[in-house]
Image 1: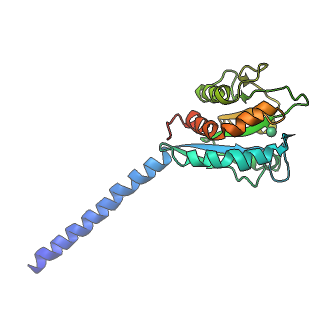
Image 2 (image 1 turned 60 degrees about the horizontal axis):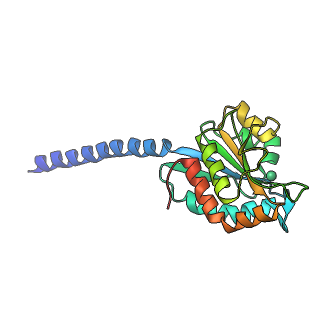
Image 3 (image 1 turned 90 degrees about the vertical axis):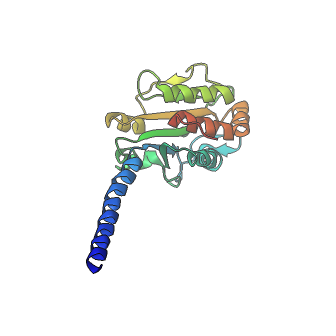
Length: 215
Ligand SMILES: [Zn+2]
């Protein structure tokens, strides 16, 4: 009997060790296969960005849009969404050797901004795209803008630019990115539409970015 219980104990110990081995790789595998997205609110850290309708771009992004994006970011299952520290300005960080220089190569970066013009009539949003042609995410994000704010006529949804420092660092490093101008902070109607539909815009963006459906 004594021998048998020893054998049994040994077997139990072996099995629990085996369970540990089996369980651990499975957990790490599922965590690492999640596609990571870095969402960046433009400006901040002393840089207000554009001004219009009694507000600043940095404020409209952080106080208004960010909480809604965070709310829907928590609901995705197959993707990992992280936010760039809202107390920081990614462009300034990039200039100092951080920011875009430190992003993991497998991460997709989505930067949020609002447009501005000296003409209060300039209106509509657009997406600054990573490559010469918009990808699926960029098409879906432009569709969100079109639905709730309207697209800027000059850009017709997309703009390919190579004069933005932050984007160029990412592009050179082969990192996937998009920059979104949801509308003009300087235009009264855009501003009203953005505020009115902020929750639906945020939901649409999270779905467009991840390809997941959230509730
Ligand atoms: Zn901006």
